Image (cartoon, rainbow, N blue to C red; front, top):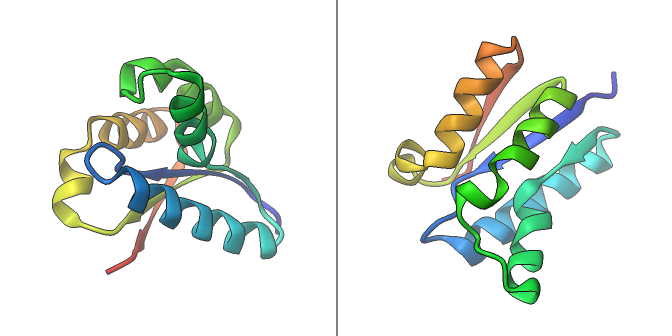
Length: 109
């Protein structure tokens, strides 16, 4: 069954790594037939080229709209500490659970 998936990953302090991992996972999920919104895939180049702040405050409202859209939130965990300390990821997980979305963790160690 095709799903609409929101793809979360810690970003601050790991910008290039997060961008690469998010794009690879998004491609994998799309190849499996799913519809994927990867906020880092979109916001990373927009921030760099458009001179926007890459902080959670800049993207929070937009990202929450896509969490409402999705069937599931997938969280890429490439570093336990990074995921645990990510304000954005923690807000995304909390909001997804509040509105009844399934949260799936993808380990990338």
